[in-house]
Image (tube, rainbow, N blue to C red; front, side, top):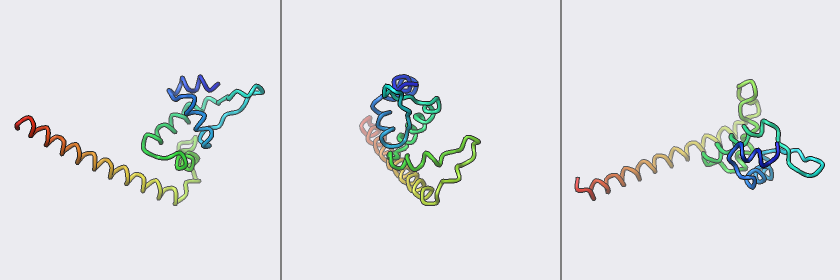
Length: 119
């Protein structure tokens, strides 16, 4: 499929898809006319990339992680290194800290709102 169709099917801009390709996250074949052609599997790949960006990972970490994601048979890939697992665990801890900070901020805001309402 061409880049426009991939963009439409994933809801991701063509510009972002070009960026993913530049970062080594996505691979496209080129037609003789120079157009990008993506396989059907690119749809799932782009969705996975979006999920990983959404949890706060940077493109270089995603590039390391993508080959380690579950294989087609559903089992974890054998190439997940202990270093990558440690890095991802640290990233999860960072996200947990952010969540805790947000909950504290929300609780403080609730107190201010309650006080302002005269409760």
